[in-house]
Image 1: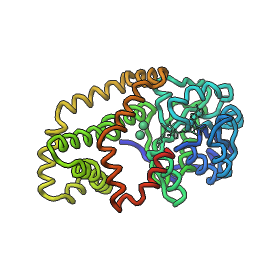
Image 2: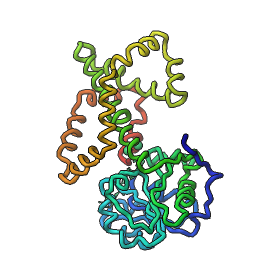
Image 3: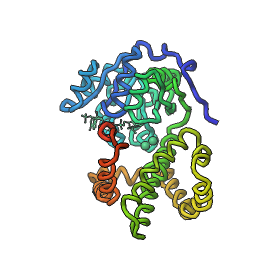
Image 4: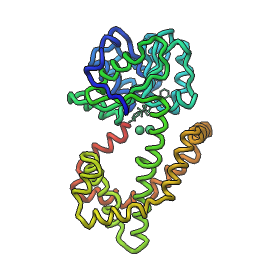
Length: 340
Ligand code: NDP
Ligand code: MG
Ligand code: MG
């Protein structure tokens, strides 16, 4: 079983007096930078000369420099630009990593798949909040925590874990709990989870169920409500109290139908497909495919993205969300989604 760390396990002296260079000011970057600074840690944000985010950093009262200048000042370099951009930012700043410095990540992809190969005399750690950045920030401001993961890939100083825990404390993660893992486990479970369930599996399930109803002559509006809108209500129950709370809350008919038909829909073929997806994550085939896709300027990705936008369920949903009062805060959630 995994070890979980809380505030009492962290010692802020492990980060006191150190300077953190936060590379990027996006979803995670803006949250880590502001939370660290408010916890009393010296922060400098690293951004391109022509970055549109420079004004936002200054407006939030923080210093901004180029990635190289920021890294030169820092004891800890926190890599919070997109995963596909990290190798090139790393190449730019690698000269600035002194012995005993730390390279800090929020996801293990580039280390685990060898896209970044740090020198042996630096610590390589991960604090990965299990949440979008705007919640990492909001929770901190509300004196709440955000659960996170901790991993140490390389411990050159012998103090890598203590420093990572102090970093986790400073961004608010130890208030909620920080689970110890490895770069390999975090990377592989994260990729598998987003592919099989969170982003891939669940959207395919929704689209195929929607198409099944519409093809059978039911109205798109009914299909949208049943297959997409109600998903949130069910997920909220599972989030609060596990599968049990969901089963307890639905009708006996829904419970019996769900228990008998769930495995008919997501059957042993789906299970075998999941195992293949996991294998491609583990053997690096997915990583190679994604790296090559980026090197080719994302032709397949662009096409798939467009096709997804063109799916009928998106038009139906946009129309319905405009019509109903429950969509009142659509605008703010769209802003949040854009911010990510
Ligand atoms: P974002 O996409 O939000 O990062 C955007 C930032 O990166 C912007 O400040 C942008 O600068 C900068 N950037 C983009 N391209 C470049 C470039 N070529 N050179 C320099 N800077 C660049 O990243 P995330 O916060 O989503 O992800 C950061 C890390 O956190 C990743 O490792 C990710 O896996 C991990 N993570 C993300 C989570 C999330 O919820 N998003 C959750 C947990 C982990 P500019 O303003 O100039 O465009
Ligand atoms: Mg994830
Ligand atoms: Mg992910």
